[in-house]
Length: 111
Image: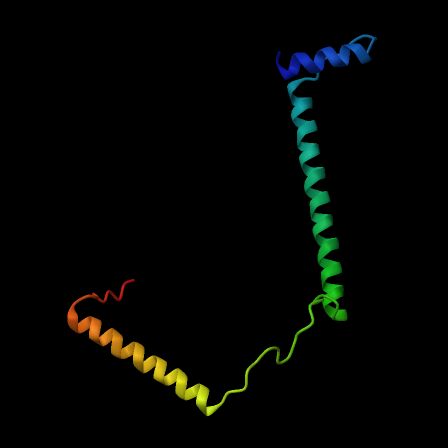
């Protein structure tokens, strides 16, 4: 059973009088265009209203509800930490050079 037949059966149960004359093609097209235009205009109005509220909130400073934390969990930088980091990079560089020398690694800059 198609949807058209289903809706016709449902409408016949609720509508006991004479069936209205079917609309002409031009009337249906005009009705569809009216629906499209009304929906478009409602969407435009909703966009303008939401833009107004967002603009108002930005001007009042309420648009950014997340508080910015200054500092946080930062560790103080010490000379020991810097020297350890540099030595780690030196170790990695030496390991990489050793692997390159042995031919175990091929360096491809495109990856």
